[in-house]
Amino acid sequence: MEPQLFVKMALQGWNTQVARAEKYFDALTEADFQQQVAPGKNRIVYLYGHLTSYHGLLSETLGLGEAKYPELAPVFLRSPDGPAVDEYTIAQLKQYWAEVHTRLTELFNALPAEDWFKRHNAMTDEDFANDPTRNRLSVLLSRTNHIAYHFGQLVLV
Amino acid sequence: MEPQLFVKMALQGWNTQVARAEKYFDALTEADFQQQVAPGKNRIVYLYGHLTSYHGLLSETLGLGEAKYPELAPVFLRSPDGPAVDEYTIAQLKQYWAEVHTRLTELFNALPAEDWFKRHNAMTDEDFANDPTRNRLSVLLSRTNHIAYHFGQLVLV
Image 1: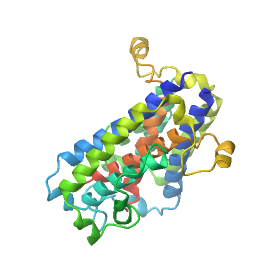
Image 2: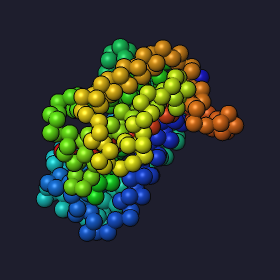
Image 3: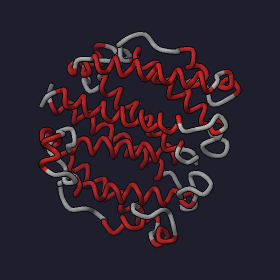
């Protein structure tokens, strides 16, 4: 079994979820972004920034390069939806989203298949020796599920 | 790279999502199951049967054995939430959920790692030759994302 095959499968899953979310966000008007996914729950604009922020950090988590837009994390990742979100325009977030995902695609395509099975930055060498499933690819699978989780909420609007 | 590693990663993802959903459903009262995930959207009871039905068919899709409870599909998979759902009690669905997932765990644990990379029943040999990523494991990854998608909705309640 070639590692290329696993990597291709995992990347296909990631690309499918990102493309589906992007298509959804791109079809919205400015006003749509202010809607909540359910009464009293996150607005779409928050989830847009939330996914952008989390994916901006992914390059660093995977040890592939520095984080993109780490300044989004206090607003979109470590805090619930609130007034601080409104300091960002939709046009800004759209630009960030595009940059973050274009860059990830470049980084992912440049990474040799076997390097996906190396440890990520969020764990120690010792932990990795004990559990080699906690590699870069497992982070990608986890982030892919995370998009699906929020996409399930977005489609309720 | 050993195929065992990738299979283990994919199964960990599946098991995590199933366990998380099960814990959620097991903590609900009978009345809770009648709640909608958002106004006018699916009730929790529908999503309970929906995941049970889809996973009951999985053994057949993967070519590992006959489908479990295929009679659920017209109500929970091929139709939206509606009165037909109420012909099933929560106790019944709970039993089906347990049986379906216990059986899948047995089938999955018994499957040699390399067999996960064989084609699934929903495609032809010719298609598989053209795209070997469309194997059993890709179905599992896809179903794992599907649980996450609906779990994102369930937590809104």
